[in-house]
Length: 275
Length: 258
Image 1 (cartoon, each protein chain N blue to C red):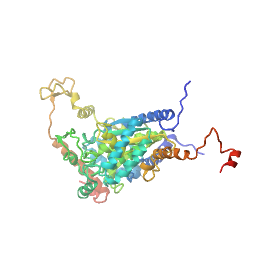
Image 2 (image 1 turned 90 degrees about the vertical axis):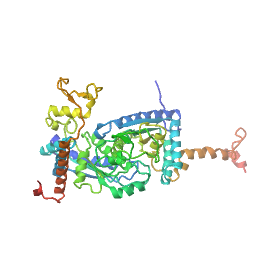
Image 3 (image 1 turned 90 degrees about the horizontal axis):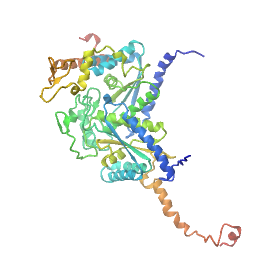
Image 4 (image 1 turned 45 degrees about the horizontal axis):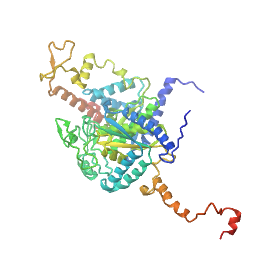
């Protein structure tokens, strides 16, 4: 007989939910029946390399920064969510010659793959269309299982990609991360950890990036004013398309810092060598 | 007071049609689940359509059989034919398609389509102006007109997955099907989508989507029942009696019968 602290017990249970989600993903019905899903559950300290790489990438990209920020604050508070990593090799063709990949036959696809297999922002390619779809079904089942257990489920390209680049789930061409909660209702949606990270002006600019037309004044003149302030007609701002060297440099630096971290963790690079 | 008799046999009888109405409810809920599934960036990308009723399903089964014999590679002929037989036993088919994969990629440079850190593999192989895809030419030299944004196709998997989850939660049998999706797409289901997945749904004592015997298109339940209807009446005409005059099962008759 014992009395358990409810919050601690709930937090401990998240690992069990991660296992249940792994079952759901592994048992998901697929179109091809040949997905070959691989999974790992990563907890606590073992998440630190991923968080460091996400932080490096986040210097130039809000998409990674927002996740890095949440993970860092959670792990610092001792409430790192167990992360279920899901991966599969989607580069092996299945022989249906459907054409979805852009090649006329699976043979043509495989020929191209052998010479040109490469990695993008977070996945290897080229990819068999049906494998990409089946991996979606499996990942969805993991999410649905978490939701069924009342665990917040936001599947993450960001966490999966850096895990893959750090060598987790060897042989997979695409890896996704599914953090299990942790507890509370505002972790990955309505993120309370994000509060204050961007000031009001930065938030306004971010919204503007999503829908420039929303802020556009009469466009018939050919050079529309962007309504960026209360009295937008006074000293007006105009929309202009230009190359942004500053941003490109920042993005390249972020990439470089990320790969430096990855090599460091792979033991290729000494920590002292860091500039 | 209303009574609703519900049964899964005989096919398309009032009790079976009542059951099919129940299945239609699940199909609708599956479509809802598909539309709320997780998706890259929360971007709306999917459309759904339901085929319900004997004739509509027969049309799709026939297109699957046409594809089986005349269009798909040899190794897919049997799976297409078997699945045509399977969907004839289903009560409804939910179709889910992505209207983005061929026309409006995610543009994130993920690497899935061509293994490059940009979207060049896709954009170099489609008709486009400044990154806007001209998707008005719909001629196909393969079953599916590629290349496609693989992240959008991956997203379609979530919609299909959530729909399947709702089916299994309701203990209704369903499966994701390439043949059914391809046939329905050719018949203009999910008309804006290049890739469509079919999800036949069935309520039967025996799940019609598993335990499929070889040459299933020749020996499924429909064929077996037709076999009984075809042969059951012939021997009866030889083992007949004139029931008004004679009852061969009585003790007296048994003795005198040679």
